[in-house]
Length: 155
Image (cartoon, rainbow, N blue to C red):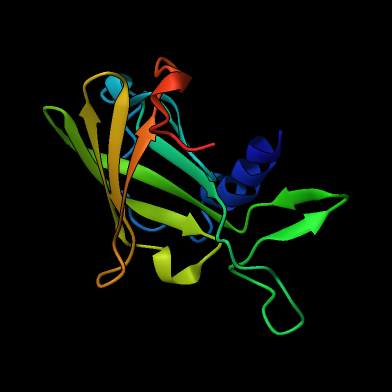
């Protein structure tokens, strides 16, 4: 439910055409990215990819919000941790097991407009590179068919 709410907050302005970068052919309505579609996770990091190439990420920043830091941080509401990192991206190009695109909207302003690369790996893993130049993050995410006993996906 939390991810649905966050996705709505991010994409209402995009759907209304306000603040949307020029996406060109990024969202064609085809199922070009069906092999990437699904929910992917790693401890504290969740990614949902649609068959049409829209990517939603919700993740822990592992920095607590305070009076001095109100954004780009996690906080607690009613005993539940609310993830401070979130972004939405459009995939634009696919080449074999890889797809590239850009982050269109983010709770962390420096991420907006930066690139994202997804690479499908065997045994239901997804290798993802994302973020601003000089601060690129590489993460291996697990799909729903990865056995929990592999311990490769965190707690």
